[in-house]
Length: 143
Image 1 (spheres, one colour):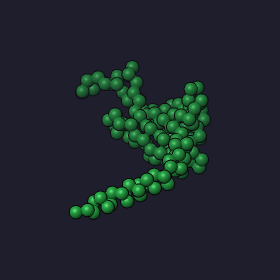
Image 2 (cartoon, one colour):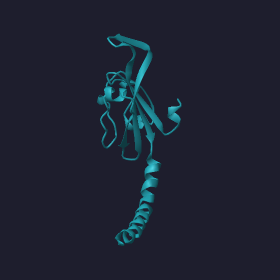
Image 3 (tube, helix red, strand yellow):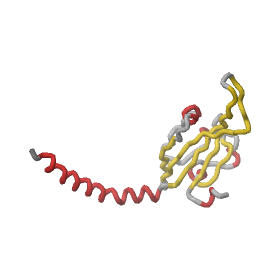
Image 4 (tube, helix red, strand yellow):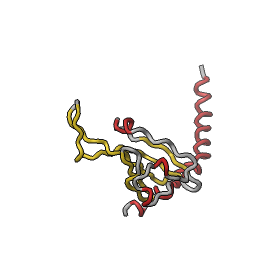
């Protein structure tokens, strides 16, 4: 319920890439309904111009979140993918006991306003850079 109130969304996947839950703006990116629960996310339609591939669980287990921008016809989103694990489920093996990795969570944050501000400020940034480049050129050409 909290996710439905703001510019944030999530999709929870199990270790097999099957949808276990979703909320918020994720439903504006993926065509998610309760019928998609238990189905692979790869089979769910999305409205992004291009959907970046999901990282592997082994890459996520290294502890580095994976980020990518997702662009739809009307909005920009930052997608962050994190590994999830369930502390209650412990796998015993040759290297002792460790938590089992349960899958991944895709977090989406609407960055449309930020992208608009960046675009609006780009001409001023270019102008300042040209001033800085012009001021630096004579100083470096002196003997």
